[in-house]
Amino acid sequence: MRYLIRSIKYFIWFAVILSITMAIMVGLGLVEADLNLMFRDGIKSIWQIAALFVILAFVYPAVGFRKQEAVVPGEYPEVREKVINFMESRGYYLETEEGENMTFRLRSKVGAFFKMLEDRVTFIKVPGGFEVEGLRKEIVRLISGLEYLFRNETNDNYSKY
Image (tube, one colour):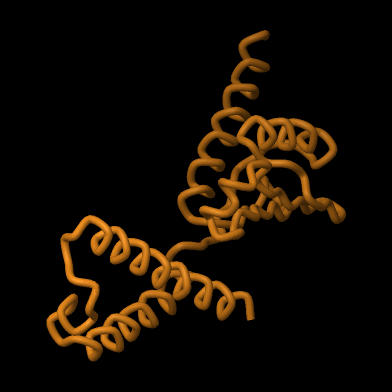
């Protein structure tokens, strides 16, 4: 169900972006305000563009979202506060915590809007770290920073000996 909702959101987002772009072009006088003159095939082009948007909206959630494992050494009580502090430093707040699983949301409502309210990042505790789920680009960035933080902390602990 979440996949279908994401697809519908992306279809609407693509349509809004196209509408804004065309409105700007009409406002600047770059194209005529008549749909039959604006597009090569006139109104028929609108259906072709809509079909393209349907295909893109159907495929993008599969490509744009992912689950990836983050290597975070230590038991949950030891790493919990550090993970929360790390996420807060990246502009997220702890939305829910169920057992050893945490869900974060963007603090900035503007940032969340531009991500079409798909700003949720979920941490599911697995042996050796967390399975992180969310937007692909965001997940890669967060996991990289999180692993760097814990890797450097582990190296600092060994350098004391």
